[in-house]
Length: 248
Image 1 (spheres, rainbow, N blue to C red):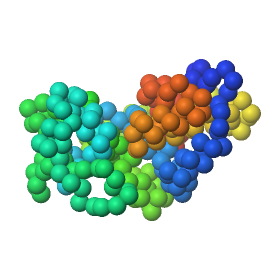
Image 2 (cartoon, helix red, strand yellow; image 1 turned 120 degrees about the horizontal axis):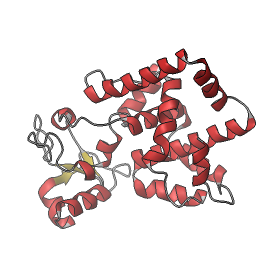
Image 3 (spheres, rainbow, N blue to C red; image 1 turned 90 degrees about the vertical axis):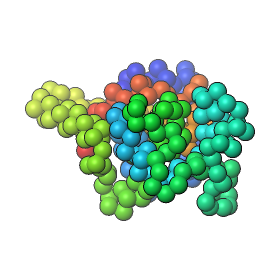
């Protein structure tokens, strides 16, 4: 966690209260513990690309930013991509905005699913809803808040492998008195450690905003804080694993 300090500008973070208030408006505080926990899990998750989500998801929404990113990846114009691969969104109103849906009929797989790969043929440019799944989907956050616990996905082999890693680390910590003491000190109420934990949770929350809402909105929040950019996944993964082991 000490390395996280290197991400903070020399003058410290700016507009902290304002940014936290904006974050509260984007994700209600009642979802906060589950939002943070699921952000950590999303960072640790390594998709097996089994294609199950690609085949079973009924509808797939795409934002205009998704469309631009995927069109660039495919080497086609935005207009061509939207005509060939998308259709109007099923819902109307401000919440939908310019979002559209990928063209797929009931019972069909995503048009970018390729069993020969296996899985998604635009994996590195996939839609935001696919980046956020499984953990930071709106439905999962609602389930977590309702059940008052972090949800698991027993049908997902990658989720099972990830949780096995977390359980293994948790067991090793419990068996090693020294490691457990260090971990307790890391997350205790001592001033320095508490400040580091607060910084980690803020950066983890910012990363969650990026995963849930997309790069543009998260980048604006980062700039208001005085950060050059939203921290990369690798900057948070190690502490995220410890956080998940302690939490779960």
